[in-house]
Image (tube, rainbow over all chains, first blue to last red; front, side, top):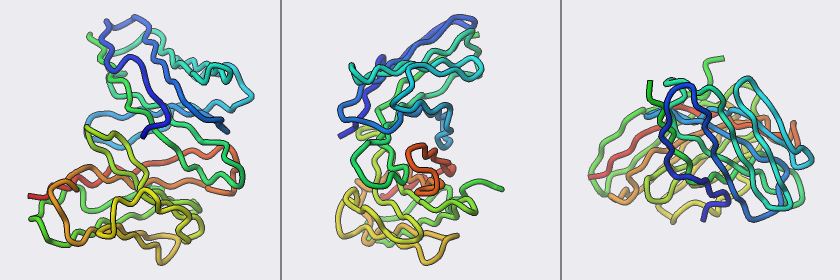
Length: 115
Length: 117
């Protein structure tokens, strides 16, 4: 079963609006990552937030992490039609030992940005 | 670097045939992962290697699936015999592995879309 669960499953907005996607997970983590997948393509890494961080920014992306609630959110500001894609959260579990980057992915949020 | 390279991009085969998917990771990456993506089950980790050694193959569905990494620049995922329920997109990804503890980022290939008739 998937560690992370995204909410909502699908989001449709107009260009210029902000898009917020949420992710919940179940076990303790080393870090949480967000990836993007365009239709028919592989996943592309967007941003990583470590378990001891609460917020991180990268361009128009803002990620928050609440380890007490085991949840994260991804905010895309001033969205563009080119942001249309599926967005996945992925957790790197803190299971002891060495982490090789074994990530568990959520089901994803399908974002559609209308011009 | 050309990124993670997978082949073939598309494969259509008949039930019972052997399928071999190939992956070339990014040079210098120590860890390699095989994922499968379907609408029903999402992204599932099948197996991963570190320094060419299989670390965890608990996600491999059954004995029909096998994976090898004979050297740092090549890995294969084999399905024999294939079944219609194996139809999916298979992704290979690589990372720096244990060289960057606690902050591994995966670089994915474009995927191999497998259709078993």
